[in-house]
Length: 284
Length: 313
Image (cartoon, rainbow over all chains, first blue to last red; front, top):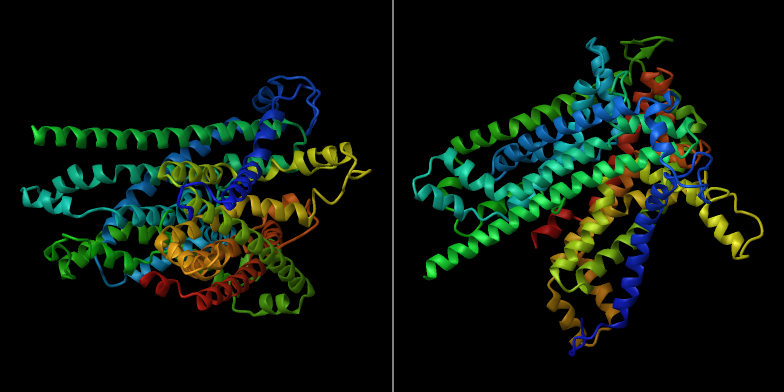
């Protein structure tokens, strides 16, 4: 970055090598278990591969000793969708509210931060005890849902802060000046402009819920979510079925991530195209 | 996650001073304040019901009595007295703090260098976004799966040992790799480095690059420029990353259980055992003490680096 001729300093190559190693460290082990999940029926938990088969994926759904993978998977997806919806609605509205200075904003903000950094198991313990004292049973769609929201809402709020921090309010002013009602301003100007950020909040809400374990462990009641089922498997399943479930759940995460990032890219591209058209029309 | 270090007041202030923002919408009038309260109410109510109230219940239950099947409302200090009298407590805290310190040091070195590379060496924004996403995506996949994916690597017949024995570096497979403190630390670093990268990246991205050019022109070599410009200006990011990593490690029980094969324990994994045995009041007391200690650690970090003052520049 210092050289006048634009050539890279030697440190660039050192850092690039270091970064590559880090990426290998991040993805290498994950890649290995996806490969190992295709072990043959006689294959073990590590290399060498003993044939290639879909045996262990089949075992996930046919062998009862593996656990209730199908049921817990359905519950986790349902819960993640619910958490994502609530997180989007609540954190978008709250984010808009935080744009004005108001008394008590610091208290509300620190409540969210405390909720974010509190060890998850403690939150779960507290909710389990509260439900117990109130004589209510814990369930993944009541106490479990609430427990996960204490983790996804602060994240959603912080993402909204970041998104709204870059938001130019002149557009809202213009809408008002042109005679828009406050509802029109929100629905036709503010929310469409915030759409990429809102998709980001939904992505975080979904994936953080889908993989959550510490807060859910004591609050899910008798029916497990998928991460809890996997956690149980780590202690009693010593076959590549464990890797197969890992591969399946990671594919789900990746599909969600790709759908979210693609929609953000599409929104941005349409917007850029719209801006170009507007420029062309105005110069004609 | 992009601006983790902006506090609510500064956020409102910055939003209010956006160029072109008309004062008539933004003045602290009673109507606006009421509107804001309505807007944040749903979020605050959910957090109060599922976080605030449960934490108060934990505090209350830590003074309760218990028998074999149930908790008994009372006001006794026995749960705390037992904690302080037990030698195990000290050992558990020593273990948790040891893990926190080692993981903090490793993730700090990794996180700082990765953020530095992304901010100062990667030239185009598109590449910056692509590489940043490359680091972020694993964060959105299952932690348990990422953790157990070290098992085929570190096991007695795992890939490392196969490679080491195969290349003749060692004659017998190393035993300490899996189900040990080493494996616990590897998993922590794998899972938590991102929490250091993102805040430091945010701080560094705000540094004016002409400062570095000025330092270079004034004769500083690049190590001196990093030490005297980049490091001080990314202090707030380092502090926030440290808070995340320390609280995550101190609050963990799942990694330490799985990766140590039950040989190591942390404060929270011991607490989880008490919960499994339905001994809620001692578990609650242990949680209260842990929260106090973690709060003191966070306060210590914030005392060293005033995050808000850093941001006000």
